[in-house]
Image (cartoon, helix red, strand yellow):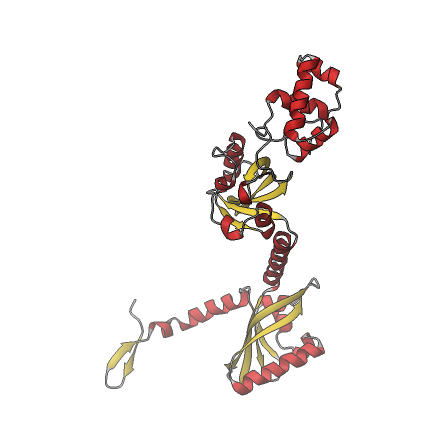
Length: 351
């Protein structure tokens, strides 16, 4: 349908501009949008009386918009707040410049809140007015405060507690190492970060149990796992470490793995070499079994058992039965967290 035409001196007739033709309809749309937008909005005159408020603003006072319009600031807000609001209104009207403003308030349920927005001058039909639009940032501020608190706790845990923590990417490379981890391995952080984990394991082959656990972790099938690893430290020595692994997720998907390292014994140049039979002897010793029961249970003669005990004393550098058991736990040969005695996770040392 042709737009309405009107005479223009010297040019005949031209159509109304499209925005002017649609002005009444768009004004109604805008009024609805402004009335129900989540942002809190108001218009006051120079005397501090509300000319218009939307639903979000009236909700701050537990009222409907019609119950606020026509009332003054002093009738709605506490005296101290009202005085501050009126002073800001006067400043905006005097300078005609918008002001970014943050205000504190209380939600209808009594919880303290904060809102951020702008106060600005409006040209009214009879007199200048003041408009304001604010967004409730209470929950955003709370989330940021919680995030900062968690970050500080994690930083204290990683850097100030001395805990040995290593963050590993899904590609198996060290992304970040705490000072405790670098000190435990006797190297600088720069020597750890960016390197593959396998470069720090003793021996070229990665234990099958570690490959399986890693695969399940990075695929998200399990959230945590633990194992005992033989790790190279500074100077070419070896150290047994209890490694507790936990998946770090983002939106439900694994993004990296956090490893907490716990030393199980002192450094040693070569791992103790014990046979599977000697490991069984150690398990029975740790369980408090006498020599006669050990020999009978393993089908050994007394002389054969004495031979294996002598070998264990030599390999473990321990002069007695209790010392052998203690040394086996110290070196991570036996699981310090299990009873009855059992081998630590992974292949026994020396195998």
